[in-house]
Image (tube, rainbow, N blue to C red):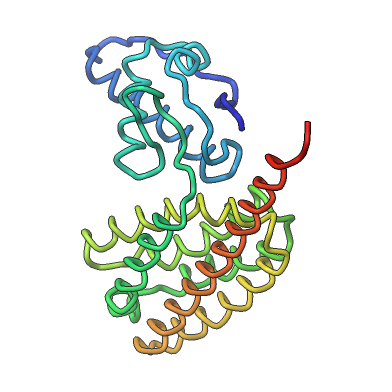
Length: 246
């Protein structure tokens, strides 16, 4: 298990005229949270990784205050768990949490379809199609995850209800941890996602709410089943490693 977050070259944060300390600290925390979030969603920082505040402060060249605020923000988004005894760590996949997550997403599918269908522009559909083509043009990993995220983001950005949009985005963000975890155990995930995305694009283009809702739910169900299978295989492999004689 990794115990260290490894971002790119850390920026140096300095006070500038006209900016008070609290404003700068909030800005630093937001930027740090964004970088850690990106590392989590692209798989550079895997599930279960320990996020030591002192180590992060050293890497980002800041005090622990903005680090603490950044971790709390990520905890609110469901990406990080903070324990008073063991500290912060990236969310570790559990079947119970994943089941709850996908059940809520499935329940929201009709609302999302109703909110989006008829509102998508041609440019957004083209962006989604281009992102989908990247799915089969890259190796599975951070590039694949980014293309998959871009596909859904292009379609979801026109959700009319702001609360629904926020909830849908947050749930989708957390689900990326499970998708990333599952990829090494799902050889057909790349082509399967591509084909399902093509069907979704056709449904969004034709403007059928019921069809979009059905395909969206089917896509989520297939993703859940793939992640569930991957989780079982992963757990089996881990138990076999533990059981090996010393």
